[in-house]
Length: 107
Length: 113
View 1 (cartoon, chains in turn red, orange):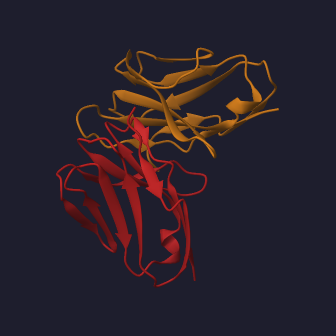
View 2 (cartoon, one colour):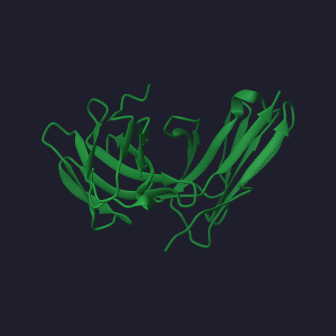
């Protein structure tokens, strides 16, 4: 069974700090997606990565897919309170989701 | 607004009961996914339909069933409810195909008392 493990599970930081969250697996994935979920809402897709070593940027968010396509990271530069939410990685056609990283950015 | 509509938003019921959750996908989307989200299990895939046909099945209990109708809306039926079935149930839709983007509804919060 393919599993996605995310770390850390919870992160509380001050506005302006940088952070990285990780999504790891022992299995190879053909693609990985990152979603952000806010309270009371469903997850919203941020990015899809498909090529080993691929790096994608979305404003202050940088996503990287591992060379072996077994892991991915999300780096946020100068975090803002609006970044607060649950960050989820998903693999294999969105059928498998990680447990998520809950990010709290304090003003 | 994702364009995916789920009803009801909240549902409170008792153990042993049966409930039906409804999902209307985005206009033009043929694929519907159902997920269960709880604090201890995270977001778990239940089942996927594509244009009325079951496409993939996850860890869906035998007490749960789903269908997608000709107008593409979908229903998730949960029966013989147990306390542990209390969770957020999400529906998502997509056009269908490789690397498709999922659009999630706002979910149905089910509380089994």
